[in-house]
Every structure is written in C-alpha cells, then in structure tokens.
Image (cartoon, rainbow, N blue to C red; front, side):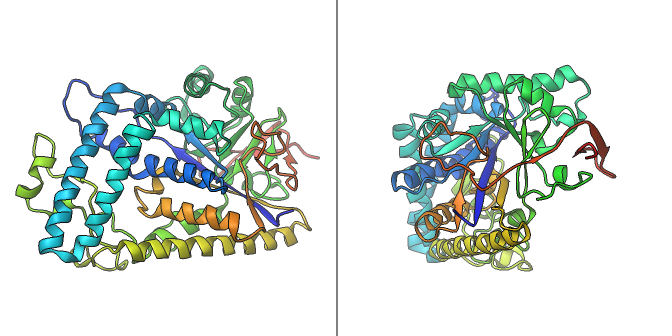
Length: 432
C-alpha cells in the first residue's frame, strides 16, 4: 500500500464569448489562447502518458460554457484561422531571428515546432473538437471528467433555491449532452460552499464536490484528519478540500515554481515589443496592439524590470520543469510520511485543485511539469499513488486504483456556523 495518495483536480472554465456580428472580437482570443497553450497540450500529454503506461489519473472539470464554446462551429473555424495566423507569424520570426537577432532564435524555433504540432492535432487527430478528445480520455480511464455550475454562478450569493438548483441541474444536463453519462463530481464555482448545497447536489445525482480549505478546517469541531481525508455529509455526498501546501508550491509566483527565473515571462509579448510594421498583418483589423502569444523573455528575477529581461531559453526551462517535478514528488513523499505518523498509520489523501489555465497560459512550462511529474510518479517511486477524487467507489475503469487506505470522516449537517469575515459557511457537525 502507498504511504499516501495524491489527487490532482483541474478546473477548465472560461466565460462564454461568441460574437458572430463581428469578424473578430478581442474576448474570443481568450478562448483561442487557452486552446493553444492549455487544452491542446494537456490533452496531448495525458494521451501520451496513457500510451506509455503512465496514466495520470486526473479529475478535470470542463465547465458548461467552455463545452459549448469548444463545440461551436463558428468558434472552431475562427480558432483555426487564429492558429494558422500565429504559425505564419512564428515562421517569419524564426527566419528573422536566425538572420538578425539570434538571441531569440531558440524560442522562435520552439514556437514554430509547437504551433505546427498544435495545428496537426487540431485538424487531424482531434478533428477540431476537443470535447470529444476529453470524452475519449475519460472513456479510456485516463481522466475523470466532472462538472461545474451552469454559468459558474457563485452559489452562496445566489438568492433563491430555484436558481441554485438550476445551476446544478443545467450543468448535469449539459454534461450528459457532451459526455454521454452522469457526472459523479462537481467543482463548486470558486470552490464556495454554503449549507444546503449538498442537498441540491444529491438530488442531481452528484456524488462529491470540491471545496476550498476553510470549508472543512473552519468546522466546529474540525474533522479529525483535516483536509487529508474526504468528509461525507449526512446525505452521503462527499467533500474534498484543497491542500494548502501543494497549492502554494505550484500556484504562487513568489514562493512557488512558476516564479523561477528560467521560466517564460508572461508580460513580454511580441505584440507589444515588435515594430508595428512587422506585426500589423497579424493583428485584428483595427490594428490595435495586443498579446499575440510569442514571448521571447524569461522571468530573470522578481525585481528585474520588463525591459531588462533576459532571452528565454527553452532547454533551460524544460530542465527546470523536470527538476521541479522531482522536487514536488519528494515533498509529497515527505508530507505523506508526516501525515501518516500524525494520523497513527492512516494513509492520507492530498487533494490539489488548480485552475487548468495555470498550466500553459500563466505558467507556460506547466504542461511539461505535469508530464515529468506523472512519468516520475509512475516509473521512479512507489510511495505516492495518483488517484481520482472519489473514494471507496468501484471505478468504471478496471485499471483505476481504489482508495483502500482512505476512510471518510462522517459529519452530520444539522448545525451550521458562519465563518467570521467570510461570505461562505462552514460545515459544522452536531454534537456527539
């Protein structure tokens, strides 16, 4: 039996934006950037890991608004033009930097390679439909797809029971439409919980939800095992809460991995740096400068001004991503041993929920980090096992490990105590 279990949960969501009345629309670029930098790379990496025998065992929410955008023919066609335009610019840049600005040539070559592969995957392998790609990965047992609120509505601030229920019921219906089955889990919008939500989830057939840390830790009394074991409400719906240590280690750009000097600088972009004459054919018709996605600088240092950033070197960043993945595994092993000793031999579960867009968009090397992490987790150690989020249930997929060592804290939802200074409400059990 492993010393500890680890569950990665990703939240893929964007606001719904679709403007057929305009040939181009700035906010639609958010979707196109996320497809290029996040969804395509993650799907490809998860599929490749599966094919090598190192299936990642990730739970990922693909929200209803995102699903609808990903299957929309107009947006699919517009994204194709966006990707072709970006690849055309990257090829020009590879030629220019090879001849006149060799400092950035390694990065330019990387963009040509990445975008060429992305275009092939988009057109040929995934047929411009990433919802189907996600569905195939779930059907193959690689991912567990969960849902979110219908419009990502913040449930504690929704004033009526009917509207809260609609957020969940419409989300479930949308999931069935796209993935052909009942969702087992839900990422509560903003991970925000309030009393009674579990009853709405139960009525909709949801088995578990993901909540923020304080949804459990501020309970009175606190669950015996904190956030490191699932908690089951009186009606049988399970709760999984965020582990703070892993969130800080990956999410923070100050003390976490994404802030390393070798990683790509997000705020230096050719759309702002290059002469207008050079990039104008690749801008929108209004000619306004904007982020184009080709970024040639590395972070360099926290206190280094943007104009002084050093050239981005892909090989150095990739090596650092591998080192960070190794370090993350060592830290999880150490954490599991400490928790297991504290829990008197009980096997802990560490749940790490993140916005999916962290991996690739904000942290460009994030998909590489996940690739290295799951490979090393599978091939190089046996103390930490990656699992889906739902405990103690027989999987639809025969190769998915069960959480044999993780028992649940049972709470009863009769009494509730509001958290001081917070709009959310914590779960408080009845007195024993």
